[in-house]
Image 1 (tube, rainbow, N blue to C red):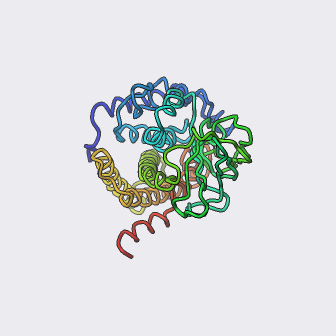
Image 2: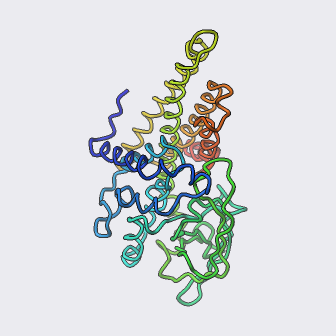
Image 3: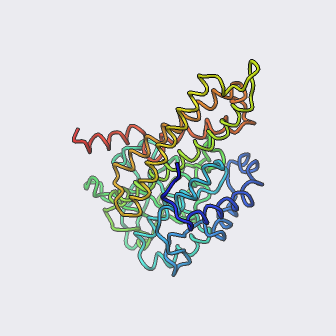
Length: 380
């Protein structure tokens, strides 16, 4: 079924993204996987291609086009390619909106030009060793001391934790204020007391640097407060729906790419004198997946239209996130089974997809948390 949500200008960006992946990423995939780190130069290259900050104001070097369909195009192409790419979804869909919507004029002049060129890489630090989905359990603290905040605590599972130059840290600035006691502080590379822990050894997504971060009496200037003091929790709630939709987009695009490769495989691979895809069971499995993926694509496209129209709700984003990631996981699992023994070999992309896709039902809010959000909205 033809997708109607995208316009010609979105497809032009899609072609640019494909050219970037082919020229700037494909030659380095093996090295980045081995290094467990995408080279910083790849972010700068993405900036030159116009793949970062297209949704940022023009006066800082951005494209000035706040249309989430452009974000979705990049997410889809990167998901089809695989995980050994710079984390542009993190930069454009997750971290970037905080700077664009919350930074004051002085902060924008200081950070946005470098962010848009890819010279400055952003990250957001929410999760802690003892606090994941329950943000109220965050123990990282920031205490005001004159013109500074004194920051103490630890974060874990931080995407771009090694490469990042600007880290938005969620900290408790008023221990007595509950949800109104959180603020967002931007910690910059090189600040005394800011230490990066180990690069985490993950099951999949090996080229995506994920790290522990530690803050010991880090003196953060008051001028690095992002948004309003005590409004950090509400700032997070405002931006999480776009993050969750981005994950859903990636899940379906990646699963579709795995499905397409498997379709060709079951046509080529023969057993008992015929293509394995011609056996009724396998044919039905492929039919099921194709149908479910197309239905999910239609819901994704409706959500993208809702974003453009300013109508996407947190509940709708939660529905997209849990359903699409669970479907993506199921599709890839089926595709491994259809490959038989070869599906267990890392030389086949489907095997790598299997471990890479597993995190999608966890990060950005687990499936269980998404269902909790939806259930509460039903009045239950």
